[in-house]
Amino acid sequence: MKKIVYTLLLCLFTWQIFPQTNSETKVDSKEHMEWWTQSRFGMFIHWGLYALPARHEWVMSNEKMSKKTYEKYAQYFDPDLYNPTEWAKLAKKAGMKYVVFTAKHHDGFCLYDSKFTDYKVTNTPYGKDVMKELIDAFRAEGIRIGLYYSLIDWHHPDFIVKDPIHPERNNERELAKDKERNLKRFQKYLKNQLTEILTNYGQIDILFADFSYPQRENGKGKAYWNSEDLYNQIRKLQPQIIVNDRLDLREEGGWDFMTPEQFMPKEWVTYNGKKVPWETCQTFSGYSWGYHRDDRLWKSTEQTIVMLIETVSKGGNLLLNVGPTARGIIQKEAVERLEATHEWMKYHSRSIYGCTAAPEQFEKPDNCLLTYNPKTNRLYVHVLEWPFKTIYLPGLAGKVAYAQILNDGSELKLKSKKGAWLDNVEDDDNGLKITIPVTKPDVEIPVIELFLK
Ligand code: GLC
Image (cartoon, rainbow, N blue to C red):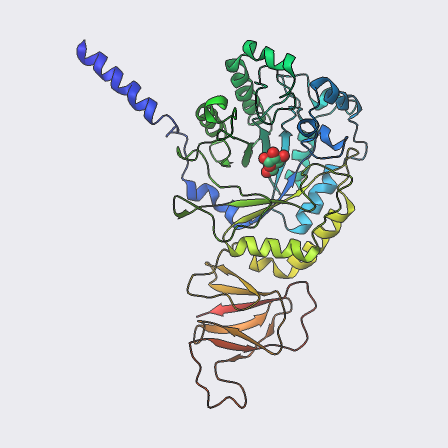
């Protein structure tokens, strides 16, 4: 008897320490990430009630709106111009291989037909499950499906209001009700909804959970969401799924990739000193992810393309965001940039798909970004400022079999010797000089493709 009790206690103790992953459902992390790291480029879509006020998806919190005030937008949600096939074709044309769509944002409003709330798109004048329509349309274009799901929920009655970012954080009446709020019920709601979106819509390739802030006073993290349980459920329902790092399970290993946003990391993102898979999400314009009418801070086409190249040159993925309007339109400035990206990708996708950071011995030439395809052993030199006549490539003498300009496949002559009148000067290292045409190729960012020996 003693022995049994002892064994039971030991089991319980081990479960407490290592409860995080369900080993039966955990898939080999490299293998299930393969398609994602090959793809490098995806579309983020932030769409919800906040498209109506059109002044940031955090408008409810920024303006400390009550639920009642905000709820009125649901009565007017009627995107008569919504055509997800157009969106999907646009993404595909730009070279994006996956989409991440907001099933629910912090405002708690569901863009799908949830059984667990009435606060959902099917109860608006539009009346249909926009998420289902979107998933079908993107799948039909061969684009992988990711869902964004907000852990934060400013609409749920059991969500604690004493919280640094809650819209009603200063509302005494609401704060007083915190005592009656039932955490277990809220946790169950999260689990039920995640179960729904991961059960009713076929294969879901990515889950983008958002977000944890346990470091802030009265913030929320894994204990509040019951993240470990959620993570196991996610993996059980979709064993192949790729999960981001915002469930607050970094230490426990309950994540597949890191998600720095709205800035460019200096180098390959690391965790505990190790390079990890990472994806940066960026807006086309300003700081708002949802449609923001008065925001005019558009990044240029060139910046957008350079952002993609730079991300891949540091081993990451880029998730570029669009915030469609209340009528269901992707703004023309974003469309223009996506079409320009298509023009560039048409000739240069070889330097993006399947590529990663160049091996460390290849130093980056002046004003250039390098990417490398390990399978084909080709190095790509993205020339941000087209120099006059010569490009100097440190560390590459004797290592290149053939070189060409990527957009037209025209040969570039390899020259390892010094230039005219400098014959008496010794090369100081093992660099390679390539003679290039004086006129910059007629593309946004020219690329030189080097076939390595
Ligand atoms: C942040 C914001 C959110 C946005 C997200 C995109 O977590 O709260 O509004 O959806 O980043 O990654």
